[in-house]
Length: 334
Image 1 (cartoon, rainbow, N blue to C red):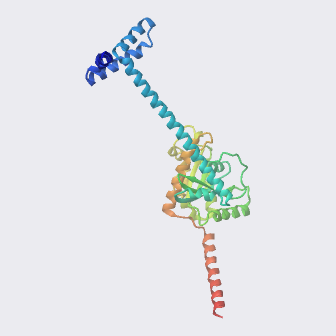
Image 2 (cartoon, one colour):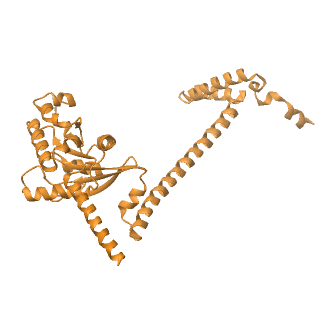
């Protein structure tokens, strides 16, 4: 019976258990502050405060709170560990998907294309030597390898925000290093690689040069000579090396210097000023999205660019198909 009486005595649990919830909460907060504050005090002062917490029952309550906090920390660590495992399996699945595509004979580009869910874009990169054309191609394609200047037009694919982007990189079509025959052949080859036609021509020009207006005028004139006057509406001037402009940091300031605005009056599209330094991945990501958005606008407004050579090729195909159909019909009639 004595044990039962002692068990039923509520005073042993601390007088704070007999108060209402508001008083208990306030007392708990004060006790916690005293308990934490006592850890920074000398032992002579710290022990009386701890003895007070023990007598009033706050030590037992704080012990329960500490165990709860420890449990929550363990759960947090477990969730972080499970998230790491999930990221590992997600990365492994994408690599395995590429491996399966290689083993089955499907090219990597097809596997990459299956991941896209938006209409594709096609663009051709042009620009004078030293303007940053190859560097911009590497930025768009996510490549950082140093390569020799290309001597023929190449076709590569990438994905930007779930959209497949076909990038046609060209050699020095606007200069004189290739010769007229080579320039003409590579210009037509770039159109064949972009069949049924590119959505935009990115004319890449170095913005930090002292003769940027003259370079832009010459590049636009050379582009019109290669692809015809109708290409003017599909040209997006792109000025690179914005980090080297000094005080002329904005596009308006660049256009107002010299005769650059007059040189670009032939084009129907506003230019872009980019900072595509290889050591700045954030700027490169913004560049890719920015240019993909501009090309998408061009596609919506104008569709594909169709060269006269491509129109002639389509007419020849139609005529050949008509001739072959007539010959086959005559053969079937006998």
